[in-house]
Image (tube, rainbow over all chains, first blue to last red):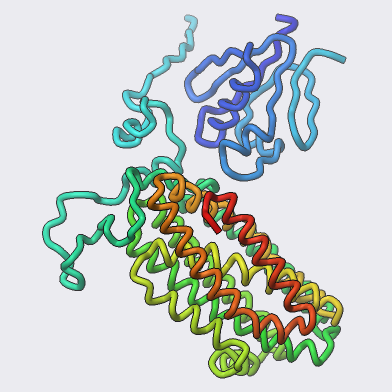
Length: 90
Length: 332
């Protein structure tokens, strides 16, 4: 399915605020709950904002921390200190 | 024969405890902080009143004049429960340990002017006794307080204060070439030096406060709100002129800690002041009272360390504190 990017995270206490932030920051995202994991699909572009996650967990969140819970992803990754973006763009 | 592997999704009957679900309004997965704090303290079915204070129950809302409809409004913005708290502090302490090793390896203490070394024994090391007072206050708040949201955060703070006292002691030992001599000297400063007596009296007075919320405001907002910027900013800047860069490195824990701790203090005071006009009035009254005591008490110490610059520094930190208190909804 070209045009759709996706990210799969474990469904645990560490990932929950990340999942919530993704769902809030990407209105067209769609979360599929599977046993133990959550696969989030989103057309074109999906962003994980560090600010949104930090707000939820009450401390600074480093986008690198996503590695503790990530299972898989589909799309090209663009990453800096503030956000992590998945897309199929150049 | 082919084997088909199927996954089966078993929905848990409950996502969280019933009492947490009632608070959240739905049975959504709760964070560990929420599960570790909400409604943990017993509120009813006590058998008899404590013999050490039969006028109240073990957990009694009447131990402070502050009134709250719900004591779990005091959520900790840092969301500390045992796990997150210990991880955060372990990381901070690791950095401090490394700084001590660095200081020792490069022998940075030897760069400090002898006169300023004396000054450090006069102002910095005695602060370990101030921290001990803060530890006692935090323990009493945790003891007398109502609702796990505030009592658990208070007992974490008590641990922090002991840790800070320990760092100060380590600085004293490092300054004294591995002996505890300077700690004894600093103790006699705290007990006898003129410049410290106002502060010592203030700390001791706060220890016997009956109202735990007043103790919280006096210690965490007012006293810490003045002592920390003075000691770790103004005094420290002065020290840098006298070769005391090593001290700034070793006190970094306190600077970071205080910024983080203030987030919690601000959240607590803000919520309490917003709850009702009576609360707001009472908190403002306490604030004005303690602020005046604290500014007067710290004056001689500030003058001793900063000399001519004392007045400006004290005016600046008290103005900052007023500004902060104003933002929290207090009438300053």
